[in-house]
Length: 443
Image (tube, rainbow, N blue to C red; front, side, top):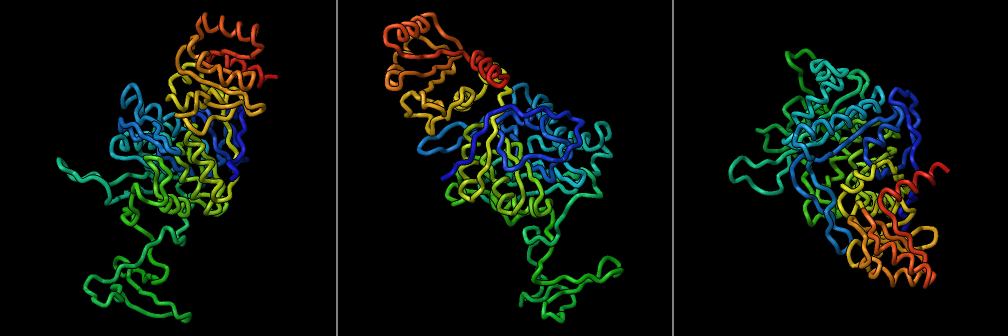
């Protein structure tokens, strides 16, 4: 099965004042989303949905093959103030990227949503006016689900909040006839037959049943067709959270139901429009967008996430392109979780990461051009590391070891292997990998 193309090169920078609206779609970026967004043209996206970290303090795991790995930690060092500042920089870029008719959906829980709403009011109000910005909020959607744990010391916390903001409140898209945004009409509560909808029932010339009801003060008579249903309210109770046994599950802790994303995308993005998710996770938003005939852009800093996304898209016939942007500093790279650090360093060397992170025999990836083995250590490399890597080096004749530092005895053994056995081993620090990458990109 095709897993899409991986393209590793830095994008040309686009000034934040750019007004070009052409943008490449069918792309998954593996990078810090702020760096990606800064390079995309202004007013180029129809709908942005994000399901960012909830500031819960939890570690989330993903299942990959027969292993369980930490996908990301949902916290920000520096506390809530740091988290809000971190999010605000990204929300400001999203506002810039939206077309005048575009919409932003921000999906969070109770821990920080009120702070994020205030930040959005400022951003959509031009940076200063909260009152003006609040007028850009189309809906505060409550996604209420019944499944999960029960409350013992309080009412059970059973909902997330999704804030819908429009770039221009007079131009945003709402496809009110889309089946995904409509629900069944509710029969009158006192009607035992289930066919009386509390108004004047009738059938039109096409034999379609309807009910007619007067508006407030009987100023206008509204007709509702039974087969069309009604536009849903802003409290959604008909979509449950995914459980461990659901067939839709792909092994990502915070995965959201595809039905939820299809409702949002169908309702607020025109057919053929561009949908972006800059906290992509396992990629439900981009999968839903492709199935709904919308174009997509995805981004996640986790290599594991982008692998899952590429696999899901390949299964539905979308051959996406993955772009890895090598803009993280050495310090930022060293702070990644161990598996993301490992995969990122392999890719910076021009390699393909191993499918497994445990039981891989010490080979974390292979150079794409010739299959040379790569081992990555998020720690200093000493002579014992070379000894354990020797069989792989001997089998191929050349290889790479990357670490945060290289000891003298490791360098001495590298020289001996080259001199006495003719083996080509390269020992590289994180800084040296980045410098080598920059030289290749400049060539």
